[in-house]
Picture 1 (cartoon, rainbow, N blue to C red):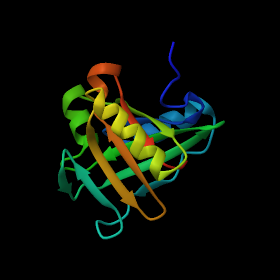
Picture 2 (cartoon, rainbow, N blue to C red; picture 1 turned 180 degrees about the horizontal axis):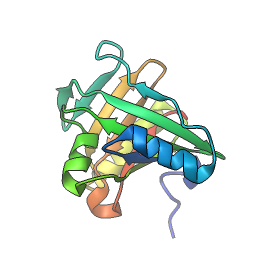
Picture 3 (cartoon, rainbow, N blue to C red; picture 1 turned 90 degrees about the vertical axis):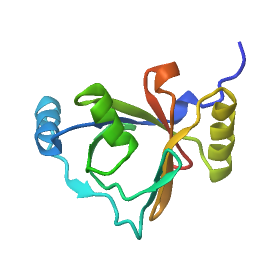
Length: 154
């Protein structure tokens, strides 16, 4: 068996897209017995540049994170603009696992992983740059049952 191209030890995130982040964050906190996580709006379009299926998007979302050991459970409620998050809600008709996030260690390694996935027919669906970081959602749902988020850093 060949070596994996994404280090499985880099799994840092399980992300859910939700219709009602307030209710969902409260439900998660009750199940885990933790405080309801803070809900934040992602940065403004001037600070956070987003592209969806090759086009500039003005999508914004509300996000809440729950730390679970070395993993983060991320809840995302999208706005009305086109995005991978909105597509998920429309396609799946409700809440569910949107992506698994992997930290690959560098911008160069992210680019190499994204190129390797493209060679396997898994192209970029949505990506963004925000103050201090970036993310790339690849369109792996058909092949893997879930989107992958390739992050250069955790």
